[in-house]
Length: 70
Image (cartoon, helix red, strand yellow):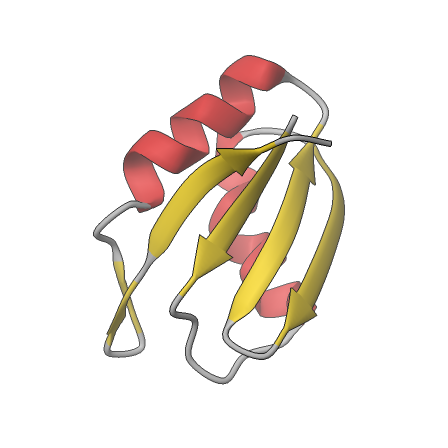
């Protein structure tokens, strides 16, 4: 399952991976500008990440995450 996270501060894909890995196995992270596409191995892990990341402050930015179609 895939999510899109928006309103990211300057960061790299490895930094993003470290934020999202506590929720489950990540199969890919692709960052472009202030957004990123993150793919999880399991649907429930992706849903947990979305639930926990929405409204999370990351280096002064409030993140927004939502499910997208693969």
